[in-house]
Image (cartoon, rainbow, N blue to C red; front, side):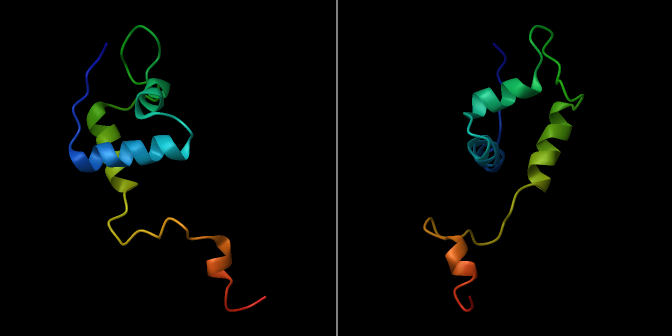
Length: 77
């Protein structure tokens, strides 16, 4: 088993990406690794993957849990 150490922000991003795809973080990472050789399936290095996760992050305020499509179109039909 491989071990990957991530800072808190990257771990949160990974968890979020995994959840968005209906996966656990471990299962999401397994999609990037082919069986056996331990290299990224996508050809990305660990540093490139970390950079990609950072690019996909959002530092702004997040939406409330109960936010819905209706909230967007509340002012018109």
